[in-house]
Each structure stands twice: as structure tokens, then as C-alpha cells.
Image (cartoon, rainbow, N blue to C red; front, side, top):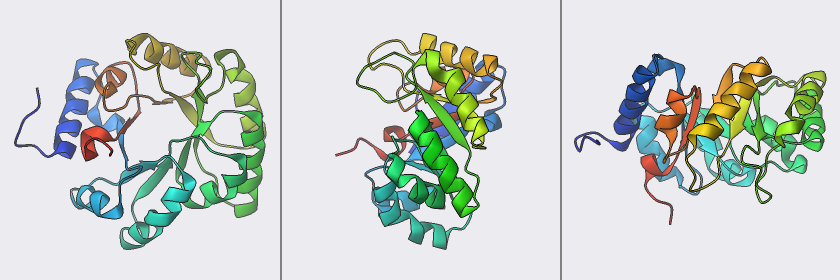
Length: 221
């Protein structure tokens, strides 16, 4: 039940708070990442003015084009990379982003480990899990997660949690519950799960980071 007098940001925050309360959690334990991919700087500024400080981008190159100026103007902004990362963009990603949600394969572990060492910057990472075992989607296979975590830790990459994108059009709750179980089994505290259509379900099932785009910015053209 959206309240028409709320801004989209206020509405999403209120819905996160309600879902957290139902689950017996504190709303402050859930980080809202405003997914600004494909949206220009002028669409992002109003959210910054309303107090949003954490944003997410899908592509390194797009982020390089619009974020340096925004970060220069607002030094407390945090930028998360939520899309697939090519190994040859690892240096650029480590340089620009404060968190990476798409660590999903050994070659990227190697590239990110070298980039962090070279730049002297430790960037927290989520291991992306192909939770629906979909051939067309990125993400580490469920069975391969323990080995990937071990190699990431060996490379001194600070892995903080697991991330997933459930299959489209299917009830997401079982996938979120499975990711939460996997995180607990592997000693990880953070869960990046839930987008505009399902973030309330994700919060109820333990999400610590929700990635919300269209509910904040409107549908992408």
C-alpha cells in the first residue's frame, strides 16, 4: 500500500522498515543500494539531495563517465558494482568502487587480488551465486561456492557475503532462503538479494543489502 504523499525514496525506505519489523529485524540493518544504471547524473542528484548515499552501477565504463564528478561534489557517497565484471576491468573497478557484488569465478579472483594488491585498496566483495542454476546467467555454481570462497580468502580478498538474482517469474523466497542458508554455512554475515519487485521478501529472509532501481528511478527507457 503505497502512500501517495511519499517520494519514491521515502516509500522504499518505509517498505524496507515494515518488512524488517515483520521479520523482527532493525530497518537500519538493511542497506538500500539505489541502482542508477542507465540513469544520467541529473536523475541521481535528487536522491542525493534526499539523503541517499549508496548507489549501484552495472558497468565500469558507464560509472567512470558519470560518478567521479558526483563523488567530488559529495565525498560521502558509496558506489557498488552490481553487474558482471570482466577480469580486464579489475583495476578500474577496484579504483572506483567501494564494494563489488559479482565475484563469480577463479579468473576474477586472480584479477581482483592482483588489482587490490597493486592499488593498496581492499574492496569488500560478495560472491555471486547462480542460485537458480540458469545457463544464461552469471554467478558461481552452487556446488563451487566453497572452493571459490577459499581461493578468494587465499588471495586476501575481503569476501563479506553472497549475492544472487533469482530466476525471473518464479517465487523468489526459496532462492533467498537457500542463499541465506549457504551464507550461514560458510560463515558469511551479509546477503545482497532483492530488487524492486521482491526486496520486501528478501528483507524478511535476511537481506542485508537490497538493490533497488525502478522503484526509485522509474522504468528504464
